[in-house]
Image 1 (cartoon, one colour):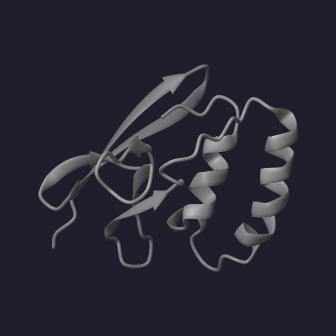
Image 2 (cartoon, one colour):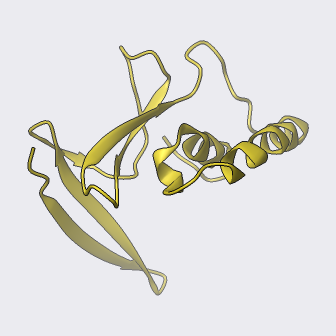
Length: 112
């Protein structure tokens, strides 16, 4: 399988944001942008490029039937307390793990 990557850059408030597109199973997808998975076993998915193999993979995360209620500070603290040690034990590229994306989804300003 051949992976084609196109980099598009944008400057907003003196910061450079890279919009990265890649091919996954013959179609063009955005990398590192979570989306809802309507028919899969998990609630969300994200396309991520593996730096070692240079291949695009899909990482699925989130329980299908649960709402996260991230606006309640005590729940957010409890979630991060449970998941930080798990993320610390991940070896290699962190964004290939579902724990990394679950923690990102709990942060403020994260849009899906």
